[in-house]
Image 1: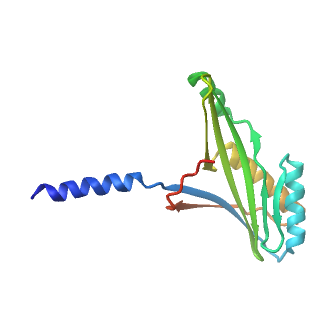
Image 2 (image 1 turned 45 degrees about the vertical axis):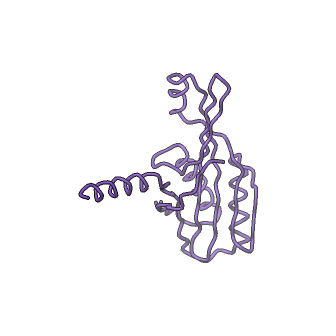
Image 3 (image 1 turned 120 degrees about the vertical axis):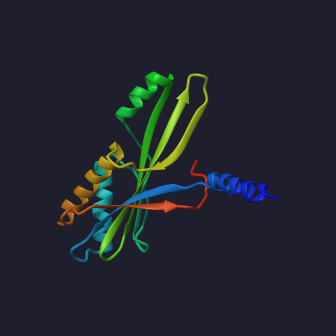
Length: 169
């Protein structure tokens, strides 16, 4: 009878450990003045295109824009390729949501690895602090802000995602 609390505690730890948690990382850019959605959409799509992103979707009514996946180089992959005899690559996708007083930037990163035996893996992550993809997002945001005459005041927000959904695509 004395073992039941221990068994139940262990079971709770195992069940909790199986739940998927991820930190969602996005950036917000406050606006000092009201900027029309059409104008913002034009500025964002122009900057994305100039920086090699294809615009996948625009919903003017909702104020959303999404890019396609775009490959980019990360110096961390070079070392991994040599150490693991695997080819690692990365792609970034950037989504935007425009509101009256700010816009949100929601980047995601697709990490791919291809082994010499022909097996491939990929998974989706959020932008890491101080990473190459964070630099890409900051550059894009600064260029958008320049087009709309807005000072850059990017604020990164970390949120815990307890959805438990698998983030593989």
